[in-house]
Structures are given as structure tokens and as C-alpha cells.
Length: 452
Image (cartoon, rainbow, N blue to C red; front, side, top):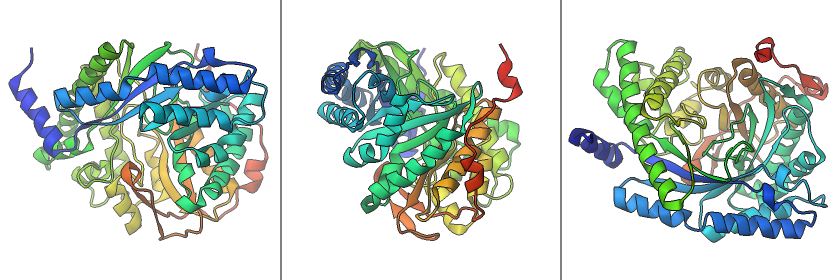
């Protein structure tokens, strides 16, 4: 039964606390678009996307108007393109990204994800071609996002792929140097990538998914921050209970939108991802939640413990609200997209090492972090390897989205605008990892991967 007080609380959250549905994402299977002729394959991809998602944006706008719930983005994820393009007789995969971009613009979505490869145990020829195409593909398209999965708890870490991705990120930054290396903001390197992630830039439509599916990502850092102001000085079990209750309400709203979109589009409902995804807006910050728990500044001692409590409580509240929680679900800590993180990084309180420690207990990993433009490809690869190791050993998804900002040094700021915000350039360690990365091969899976 709908409680009037719950309705009023939700309205308050939307009007004053930045509560929104961050994205409705339609996943689309493209395996039936495979064709030896790359031109025919691209035509099929365009037709499949535009036919499947023809009404996605209009449906999202209608729900937004009727229910008064802000829906920030409408997005599409597709089958990893290395799989869909693998049958085509071509060495150039950039046209596949162009077809994705053209289709996404035709239906009016904000982003399309899935220019992706899954190489955690090895690379096929199609995987290699796709990775080689990433810098050019992200430079010549506007809304295409790319991801590469280089490790998993079951398979270990493909260090050949890790080395290649460091070089790819550098090339991507150079190819989009006129935009501050913006291409890198659309590229994620994963360990333990999930198949039902609605968030960009890492979304792709997994091969275990249905023909089409609707996944929704909700967000509410401002709501949690506001709620915590009511329990100042109280014990952590009280704090955790309040966060759980808040996450329950946020997830319920997301499930309502997801089911409504599913029914109107005639597409199965997949999951609600209840990740706390911040924005550059004041009052919509994960860092400010951690500070509300009693930390003077995000990044100081105690930050990892506070984030662990937050992430766990969000998950517990969400699974009580929906039996279809999935995706990443927890707390994101992207530096450029969180005004509190930006402030902490600029003050020197938040470092790359501290962020790495925090990724052990949060949803994803090192996200939207700008580093000096002269950072070597080997250093980038070593950072990816460290983060992949955390994911592999802890059986969780971790990811790296780094921007080696061309021409920028520590202390400079890279401006991206919109939800991507601005990133202060953070220092990396200067000790070389060249010989470590050059070894190649595979870091074996941990012993607990043998559970079966």
C-alpha cells in the first residue's frame, strides 16, 4: 500500500536533494548482425539499433513528465563489438563505431556503450583489431563508449592486454589532445566486468542477456548526505540503518521507472543498479557523505572505513527493495564528477594511493582521474594491473578510467563539462614499471578461483 508520507519524502528528495534516475539503458543483442561484408554488417547494426530503440527516448521523457522523476540520460548498450564484428573480413573496425554513433544519434540517446572486447584470458584477432581501433574510433565519434575486460577472478590477469591498454590510453589522449584527452573519458579498462551495467563508459550487453533488456541506474548521493545530517554524532550502527532505509526508497523509485519503461517498450526488465553516482553539482557528492560521517576531509585516515560502511549499507537497503538489483550497485568515486572529491584532490588530502585503497571497498575503481600528460604507457599499465589485482583477489568488479591530459602537469585542471565535470591533474609515482609490464604473460588466478 502506498504511504502518503513516503510520497512526500520522495518529492522532497527529487526537489531538493538531487535524487534522479541517472539512466535508462536499453541493452541490444547484435550477434545476428554478423556478416562477412563489413558494410553489410554496419548496415545491420544501424538498423537493429534504430529499430530496437526507436521509442526509448520518448518513453523516458513521457515517464519523466508523468511521474515527475528526473531521468538524466537515455542510453544504449550493445553486444561487445569485437564479437559482432569478428565475422567481417576487414582490419578496420572504426566503421563499426561510426555505425553505432550514427544509430545513437538517430534515436537521440546520450551515449552508446559496447565498443568493447573481453580479453581476460586471451585475445582473438577480432579483439586485437578492436583495441587497435579504439583511439581513432573514440576521436571520430561523439557518443560511443568503449571498454576492455583484462582480468577476472576465474582467469587471472592478461598482462599482454594490460600492456596494450596502457599504450591505447596514451594514443587515445594524443588523438583527442585538442579536447584535453577527452577520448580517454569514454574508455574503461575492467577486471570482472559485469554484463548488465547501465552506466557509461563501461556498459555493454552481455552474451548471457536476452535479445533486448531494460536496465536502470539510479543515483542519490545528495539524499544520503541530507539524511545523515539527522544522526550527527550517533553510533555507526545507527548511521548504517539510516543509509539502508534511504537506499531502499531510492531503489523503489528506480524499480518503478524500470518496470514502467519495460511495459511501455515491450522489453524485459533486467536490473536496477543502485550505485551512488555523483555529479559536479554541490550537494550531490559521495565525498561529502564521508565527511558527514565525521571526517574533516575525504582522503584522511578513516576514509576507507567510512566508504566500506556506505557501500555495504547501500547494497543491503537496495536488495530489500528489489529482487533485481544488479550492475555495479554501490558507491562510485569518480574524481572529476564529484565536487567533494575534486576539492579533496586539489587540497592534497586525496591521493592516487588513497583512491586505490578506497577501491577495495567501493563499487568500481580509479575513475575519471587526470594524470600528467607525460605519464608513460608503462605507468598507466601498471596502475591498471594494480587495480585489476584488487578486483581479481577480492572477487569484485574494478575498473580504471585514466586521462593522461596532453600538455598538463600536476596542479593543472582539465575541463570536460556536463556530468564529466573537471579533473585536477594528480601525481603518479615516478619509479619505472617498464620491466614489470614488459614481462607479459598472465598473472594466474588466485586459489579461491577454483571453487566449483
